[in-house]
Length: 153
Image 1 (cartoon, helix red, strand yellow):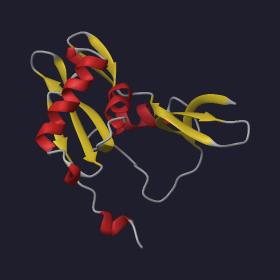
Image 2: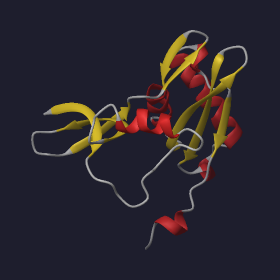
Image 3: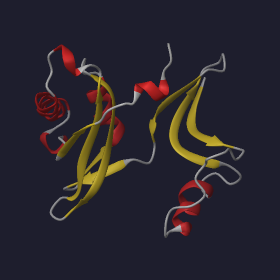
Image 4: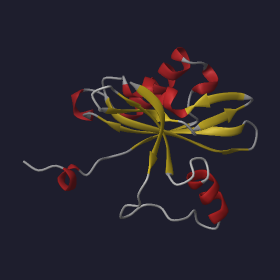
């Protein structure tokens, strides 16, 4: 049993090759932390049987009015809501707070009683209660999956 950073030793089709207008940042972020490996930015736990479990982003920290907050912490709370299938939290430049938060989520099934506006407000309140008021996202965006392209049967 071991935990650490998830790194890839070989290139694969479709992998990132740069960051637009900032190749030095790409090299620093993904290729210098673990020489000879591509650093994915994810933490991983490997069991003694050889199974891998992703434990969250290691590099996604948002600084909101001096409070450092991991995006995985917020996503974990949102993902435990019965009406949420998946979520993602990102930071964006904010003139007053330094950084603000945007929450994107994919609902499980809106048809059984949750309206998306009500659910967005409920998620903001849930984050405020479980973490702190400053952790609630400034913006909440409902996303949709195109299941016809990803699932068969």
